[in-house]
Image (cartoon, rainbow, N blue to C red):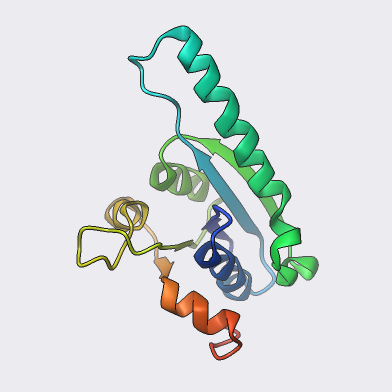
Length: 152
């Protein structure tokens, strides 16, 4: 099954990639880093400045995937995409484009629901029309320590 995974370079995102590769079981994994466009009400000069930096940072995040301990990608069928728009929308849009059977993302746990889910995770759960797996900070810590499951 094709799997789309959100990626921002965080420990939970790295754990999400690990889980996505295992979930895909040899099928394609599409790693997505979303960048949101600046608000419409900024001047053209500020728009230019704000637009340039996130794109460069976003591409740097994607370029560093293999350098950050995502060893499971070495033998996986994967691609990375830098996508404009809010992260949850971007993940759903890419999942639709590639016909993914699932979406995986990490959560930083900053959300309003008892600090369980981040805002991207909350939005993703609300708008996704396919299964969503959210990897939280404690899960990522367990997996990084080698005490978590190696496959879904």
